[in-house]
Length: 495
Image (tube, rainbow, N blue to C red):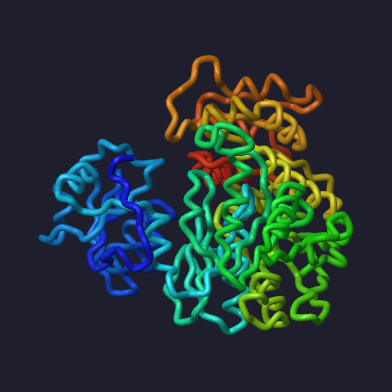
């Protein structure tokens, strides 16, 4: 984009910052940090929202709607304008005026890089699990007595926030690969949870997508560490290639994965995991600094993928200098992230008594598989014969077209499936690309309903549910709005 401004550390005046799309998860987070550091913050968004109101209460001036005049909300022009080039069109009037006024326009990733300069940077990357792993790491570090700064793509359930300006010298953040913005950072500790082709609308090929993680590994600073999940073949391969280039690499995962990748030093290995209702008891062996010790903790978020994410948090936090005993205790206190297997409520009485509703952000086939597998493990461990019912909204026409069969296979892990129309987000509709691409490929033994009427979902789903079922609303779009409405519909039937 012609208005992009490439930054070097300390090169941008952050005294007056204007953020276009300030209400978004990523933008609102960095805005909070700027305010905590004493900057004058202004911004705009298409609608009022809870994040916008929270920023106003902290001192930001935010306009609803985009207008060139928004750059003067304080009576002065900003020293820098921040945008997400993927989400904000180049003809946005605020960006146009910034260019006319000669004001630098930078990406959120540039701003985050500026905010992290001078800190020990612990960055978490990967196709899946970034938000959960970053959140676990933050909670564990806080429990260990650290006060890290952080910027997360979702809200911590316990803290109720997605960003914080801490007093400590550690900065924890997600490193987003979707537009290669992770290459803006200089991690001291870089974690790669997994690598699987995605965002092909940006990268074009699988090879280009894989390469961005190799390039990210090369960004690790001297004396730092690349931490990779050995249970993911592509992440492990990335680690093996990095070793050959002289980068310090440590791995985490199961004992079998560690044995399969002997060249990667095994920093954290899960020795035992046991499902106990809604909990997973984990015993892990940590190998750092030439010593080996075992630590136990209990996870309240189900799923093998969450066990692996917890290992990443344990290992990376220890490498950052925290005490592993206290990190393990902190993991036991992790209560989750909004929209990651988030419990919305229980129907206590009536014909749907015992039915539970959860909401999840999963929008890639692998994520859908992981969440539905975790849900099935949960209901099977309870032994009450409950079914897993999913209400899924595909996200992006390109992703639906590229992974229709994979989505069908993943959704077939549920007992009952409802599929909504595609949430296009930034993309225009594509001819012949509809949710039927998924439903037509699903296992014929799984009951599936294609529901094009968003408003009819709660009533239609209620006709498919039995008492005690586990219901999941799932997707990265507006489907999250339905969880509470479904719960209300089921509760209305109480007698």
